[in-house]
Length: 460
Ligand code: HEM
Image (cartoon, rainbow, N blue to C red; front, side, top):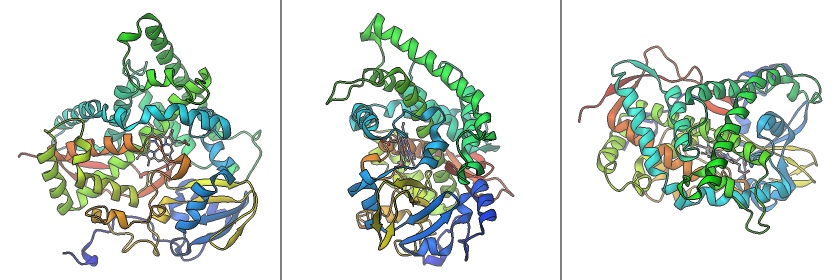
């Protein structure tokens, strides 16, 4: 058994001793919000603070989190800053909708992500992983940006599972447009943080326009092709997520989605599903490159399990999944979940005024000194052999919790398990010399400058 000093402590900013002043804070929030957190954030159940936009409460007390995201969730709506950042193109989609519109959509869309449907996507995920292996085999001994490859792969999985008619454009074109789109929305616009009204033009918003137009025309092409096929011959239409989306009905009202909502949800699934899962895969592969012990364990599991029954595959990849869960703890792709209080409340002994922005930051929560032993250490054993059951349900939230929990969690975990095991079965990845990995928070938590790795074929 290794002692804790021998454990891997992967790169992360050291918490600041004191909070930053207002101008420096704005600068850090725009470049990398992970570098703004202070020691107090990682030690206290709640930290009250203020930005020029108003009062902010960072909540890390599990009971208070339960109150915000579950028991009293009707008092906490997605806050305007988040909606503003995400609104371009995604408004009217499940991620940003509120009230009755959200309820109707969530009920209608739930069957698209039912366990049985996701299991039926195993084969498509295995095929996409095999295509990635094929690409990497051509690069044996060379340096590849694994973050780029993971993003390409997750887009391919979406294409195969959601839009099996294709994306209407080349996946590469969409991938690049998506990358620019995320870069543009990923920086908090200082004007938003300052609370300037919407009519003040934002440079970041202007940059988005051509990207949005490209997506909208690609999506319109996908939907109209599919509608035509459904009208011509329903029997020959693929039972993928797009068909299910076009057929989706709220079971209580029988209502379907409007054309605008269909488009917004397609964009939402691409936006919410591809960069997040890609980062989860990227961080898992990085951590495995740093830990010979876990690399051996995952490779042994992959050798043992990958040739068996396809549908139940992800469930047999227990150690691989523990590595992914630990990667999602240390580098949660969604680093912060935020809400606005609609009415006064009390959280962890602090009065919460109406309008307060309540932030639950998985990045902070997952490294909180009061909730985890040796929180900055990489240790997938936390998720194995009954240890998982001892983790407080409200202390580990890579996918959120409560009514707005990620609808794609099972999809993402199944995909990541299959891909990480498949890559590890065929390759040993080694960080490129002289490359320092550093996490940066831009909508998702990703390695700054990508993840260049030497790809070495494994000969079994
Ligand atoms: C590792 C991968 C993923 C992570 C870490 C992740 C994380 C999250 C989190 C934290 C939330 C809750 C946000 C909140 O409460 O404010 C969320 C919601 C959501 N996610 Fe994911 N997600 C992932 C993959 C996916 C995938 C693959 C899809 C779809 C294909 C997806 C679609 C959504 C949608 C539509 C919502 C909004 C649900 C609602 O409000 O009802 N996500 N995700």
